[in-house]
Image (cartoon, helix red, strand yellow):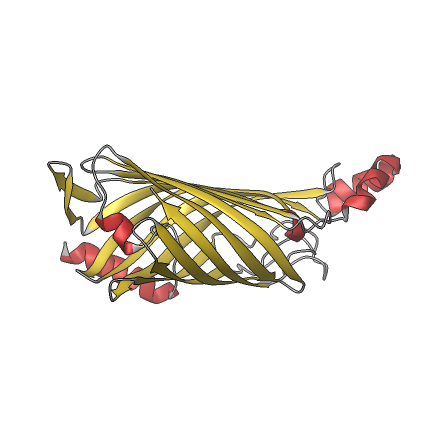
Amino acid sequence: MRCYVLLIFLSVIMVSGGQAQSVLNDKPFYDTLRAHRLKGRLGAAFNLNYDGNRKVFLLGDALGSYATRRHLFEAVVNMYYNGDKSDESNRFNFFARAALFRHAMVADTLKGESDLFPELFLNILYDEGRGLNYRFNEGVNLTFNLYKISWTRLKIGTGIFYEQESWRVFDREFLPALDTLDPEEIKFLQEVLGIDKKGNINRTNWRWNNYIQMMFRVGEKVNITTIGALQIPFRPPSEGLIDIPEFPATDKRFPRLTGDISITYSATKKLKFTTRFYIQHDQGQISPFAKENVYSFTQGLNFNF
């Protein structure tokens, strides 16, 4: 066990980051898991997002968790809408995970969490405003419970995932004009710029995924969750594309860095107020609509069941 701990700890230290795979709810939610019972959350919130332009979204989300005596299965859906009928009006995120051998239950009651366990996950993301038609991530993490007592949890993890992306590089108003181009212009777009007939650039890559997270309780009502993430691509995101200023440097393996902190106040056992701040830095995005830095603030209300 000491060898596993040392290897994982050194991996995280070398990259100094993490991914938000292992926490989809607050500490009391996980402390009250029961075997073969569905738990969940429904939420609504206002989201202020800044990525070069300031946008306000109405956010709705839903989460479901199902535990067996050894494993935990979870899925969450987040939908963003701002109603201005522009290219910035829709975002969608789906995340599912299977945390295998995560815990032990006796008589359907949680008795302890494993020090080391694997997680399989799937993430699907769509963001119209950033020109992201889709992003599919499928992978596996190895999670280590570094520190756990009654009021706090500290976890670190490392893993690998496969990423598939489709980026829109033109305004939607221009897309019908692609059908009017002559064969030589279409050939230039496809063979030189790597843009397909629909005005998209499609990319695939493998990434090394690393994360660190802390969950802790303050008194009886307040719970805080913090997450740091670093995802390092195996190949430069723009590898194989023409070296022009509109695309990221073709020889740089730009990492994706993410930070997230959420504070939950429990008004009742079922009703909770949540405040969340999120930041992401990614220089490897292909679309000209996707800025390097994204800042997001969310204030919402959740109902747990």
